[in-house]
Image 1 (cartoon, rainbow, N blue to C red):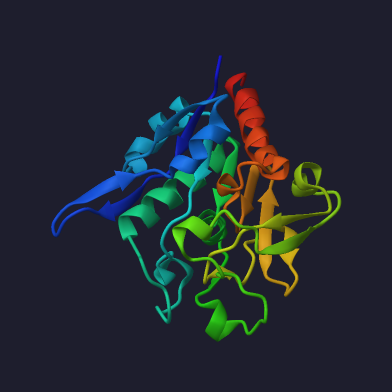
Image 2: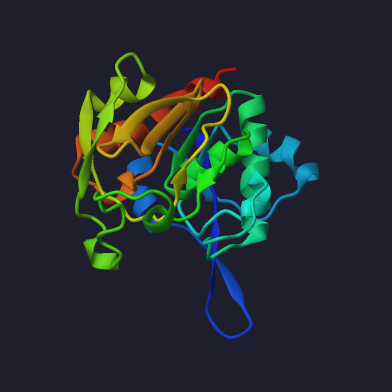
Amino acid sequence: MKPNILITSRRDRFDSYNLMHTMNDYLVPFLEQANTYLSGFYNAYDMKDIVSRFDGLVVAGGGDVDPFYYNQENRASKGIDTDIDETDLLLIQNFAKVNKPILGICRGIQIINVAFGGTLIQDIPTEYPTTLHHAPYMEEGMRKLPSHTVAVEAGTLAHSLLGSGTLVNSFHHQAIDELAPEFIVSATAEDGLIETIERGNILAVQWHPERLQKDPDQRALFAWLIQAATEAMAH
């Protein structure tokens, strides 16, 4: 029996008045051993039912998190959707309460950090001077290209999946600043920016593994999620 995995939705405007829920199609091939579903908008009253129906959660990439949620003014954040923020935060916190596995991707690592009390660098070029380009390939067709390496800490969940280091793609202008309590940093870029965090059954990466489809390291991240979600089904 396959586990049920919930993937957080994002919204795109398709005309002057209407928004539609969308899902990153690149995720689907990595989750063939699970039943996948796209989230809608939920409030706190929905959470008990939602969490009981699903065995794991993917927090997908997307626009920036509203700095309101980490007690800062908006200096450089863009693409904000507060409905998405609120739903993501509720899902993350409630899946974590019952120890169901969560995999965060790009924006996912950022809002997971915020959900548990961390903060973000709102704009790497202006707030974290570095010669490493974290958004070299913003064009859609180039996003499958690896752009830099990350070093992975021994003894971590990330290390068991990725080894001591791996090549990653990169297209983000924000990153983790203050780490949320109880989390550990399990991988960093050459310039020290945080690339992977984890805590218990939560693992999150700053890059987009779903676009590196031929890389076994990236497949290992999704295999972990499916295995952990399968184990959650038994409890």
